[in-house]
Image (cartoon, rainbow, N blue to C red; front, side, top):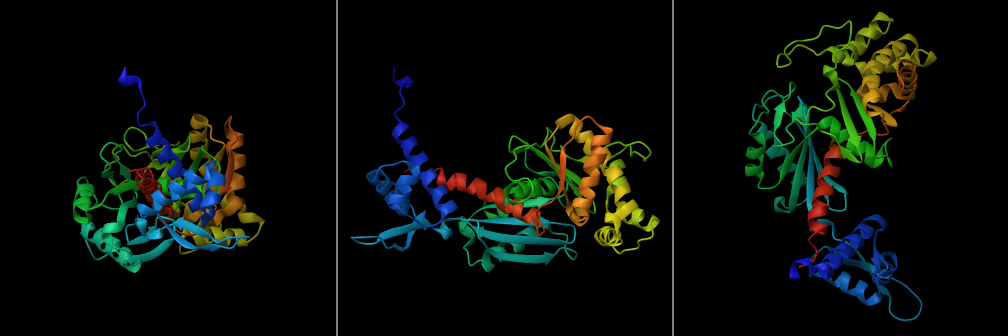
Length: 391
């Protein structure tokens, strides 16, 4: 009979109440015990016990007073920022950027390093993480998670990098080496997936649980968000849209070689520059090429028309399978093209398929991969810290 009873229910309720209170403090800033009680629906006595519990565990602290009517001022409480830290890392072929945030989400440290003169990925990440924590004046022991955004495939089972053209020295076994070196949980995630996490948090996809993000830059990638979760696929290859076979473009037979895949040939930065040159625009990079075409008038004219036609092949192929309500164009080209490019892609997709997703440019202008890495780390650490508040 005892197996059917729920002796842990009061403990569970306390944990749920504590988590709700912590989330409210993060969202609304400093609050009094009475206000926390009102917002959580708890009695004054229960709310006071809750605050005392969180204060004892070092998760909240008194940060001031709120003047009232008669009687003493009420104490204001807030989440203690230094109760935990996270570090996000954006790893590219030429540089590594790392940022440290406290548990409130405030970014309090940031470093950037070149990777051109080293072939030691463990050393690169170690230095970036240590320096990011140092710039934030945070003890490395308080860093509860490090999330690294990298190009290529991440094995959903092991968490290791399995395939990354741009980072030939990054390989299986690196994850274990980093965890041993840093003595803290380390997680790899595809860089475009992290950009989608940031887009959902504070970009063009806020409030949506289903959307697709297409990244157009030096390479081409895609992130798929379904039910508010990233879809990785069985091997981690979901979203590798650059390998989409398209007509009229050579299709490599061995993807382990460095031959450029078919769809990527059509729409990556090199292709964008080529389209611009064919229409009389010469630029050092794809961003400048797209901007020059737009500045010339008619919202980019034939350059954006051709890019939209090419992009629509990949976008439509994805959307007739997933039927998402929204497609976000990100990366250097997606950002530079803005709504002029997005509107054209939306119309092209509607013309060649049965689906009509809304297509919009990214709502983020600065470091979306790094922001996504920090958000991913924060979500996990808050679950750990806030989910274990009852001793």
